[in-house]
Amino acid sequence: KSYGSRKNSLLNGNFSFWERGATTDVADTTTADFYLADRWKRTANGMTTLQVTRKEFNLTQAEVPDFPQYYIEVKGTDSSTLASNDFCALEQRVEDYRTYANKNVSISFWAKGSVSGDCFLGLSRFSDASEEFFKVSPFTVSTEWKKYIFNTTIPAITFGATNIENSYVALAFHTAVKNGFRANDSVTADGVNIDYNYAGTLSLAQVQFEEGSRATP
Image 1 (tube, rainbow, N blue to C red):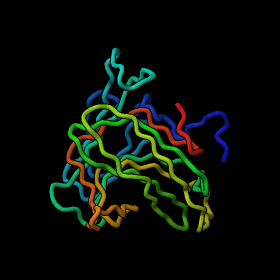
Image 2 (tube, rainbow, N blue to C red):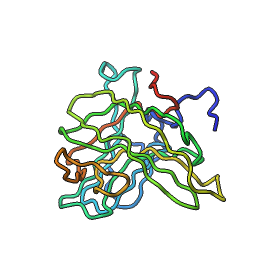
Image 3 (cartoon, one colour):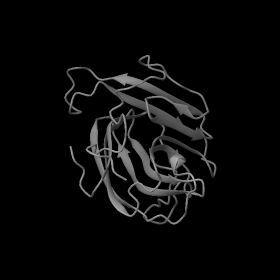
Image 4 (tube, rainbow, N blue to C red):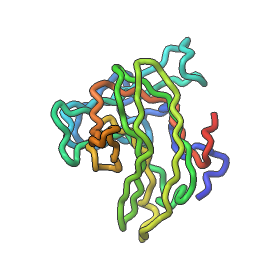
């Protein structure tokens, strides 16, 4: 699939456009799937706390480059032990499940948290025939902005589709996900399964998803 001169397959990766819930600092706590900044979606199951907020950068900030105007805050956590299908993710779906199949991709973004902790980055692929999930990497946030870069290979397609128009590849930032679900196979050094259930608020800015093994500016 060709994106022409647009290297970033995500639209609105810098969260500039907010036609839904566009009032600054309006929080969302609905348990249903929730659309927010254009092209982005918050989806969750089993969370006791959910929140999505648009935040505005100070014009004089110098931590995140290229003078972004907005960033997003996402909170999705469960106060108890995660059940088998519990998760919370901020995702964007890229049309056509064949996109980047059997190719190297680079994912880059800026992130921080209200507290230090671990989140999980994943991919999914969907057509009317099937859905599958892929692990990219867990990532640890601190209370300071930091740039993250991950490289992975999206596997070759193993299932068909009769409706390409409704198929997609999705990038998903998880604040919570049960081990064994949505490709979370993380374990400790001594083999104990890891659940991600970040208690803080995750902030994201300048998200890019592009073909190739090198993340570009």
